[in-house]
Length: 88
Image (cartoon, rainbow, N blue to C red; front, side, top):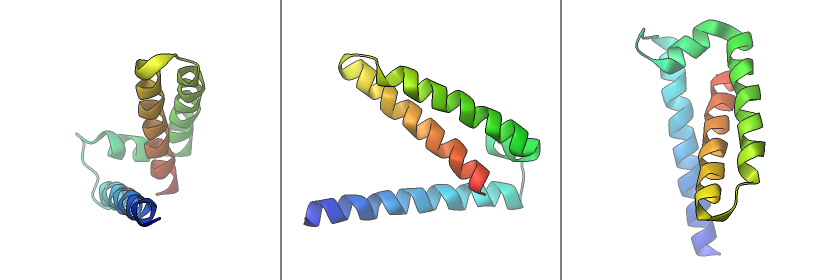
């Protein structure tokens, strides 16, 4: 149980840091920042990326083997990022 709590705590920390970074881009946009560009595009642009990434998660879920699993995890992370941008 201790290891599970440690992992959850580490995940919370990573997700909190991600949101802090995204909120920083929102407060101080940069022309070079992909996050800033998404935020400037509003709900339509961010929503489009969420739909795209969600479809990629579903496609990757069917890929076999370790490479398929890695791709699935990567796509889940991409979706999470875009959801966090929308939440910001």
